[in-house]
Amino acid sequence: MLAGNRIVRLAGLEIPGRRPDRADDVAAKSALVALVGEKGVLLKHMTPTADRHGQMPALAFLVINGSEHSLQEALLAAGHARVGPGFGTVACAAHFLAVEQRARLAKLGLWADPYYEIRKADDPASVLKERGRFALVEGKVISVRSSAATIYLNFGRRWSTDFTVTVSKRSESIFAADGMAPKNLVDRWVRVRGIVEERGGPWIEAIKPEQIETIAVR
Image 1: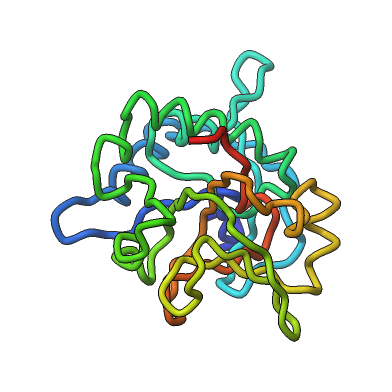
Image 2: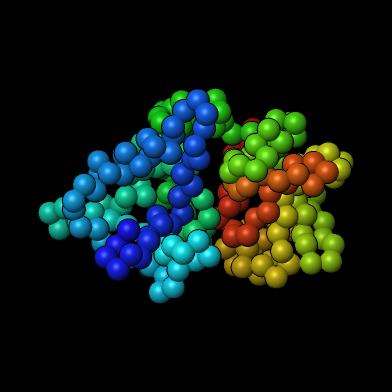
């Protein structure tokens, strides 16, 4: 919270919610408190108005001996957070995705817990266990279809049970400009991140292109 009671949210981060068995959100807060303490924080790209939650997303930095140190990067590097939509573009998110991946491979923080493992698109029952939560899902896009105002990225041949990602047709040009044109993702292996919902099978709505990243063939 800033002077004047304005609340800043660290843009582009997904902090885990409270769990009955573990306080991962408390760990993230404690890490942030340890980093910041009573120091001043440099905020960049902060929106002039609050979002629907009354918060203003921003990139936050500590300035130490004239050098800027990203708080978002520090939390990702320690495994206290995951990359979420909010960095603006695929290119802007790329650095933070790489930081997240290093923490994941090293099994730091959240990544030491199987609860946060990446789900496989070809195992829709496993993906459905994440319903209502932010999750990462990997798989091969089998087909891309459109209907009315929605584009469907299908990861299986049975839409009623298999994993699906949707993109609004209104956002298609934005995805295309960022190199994530839905039609070009057919037969590509991708990692998708977002809130898992259930619509027949498990489903994630991709609102921003940085929610999708192409990955090496598995």
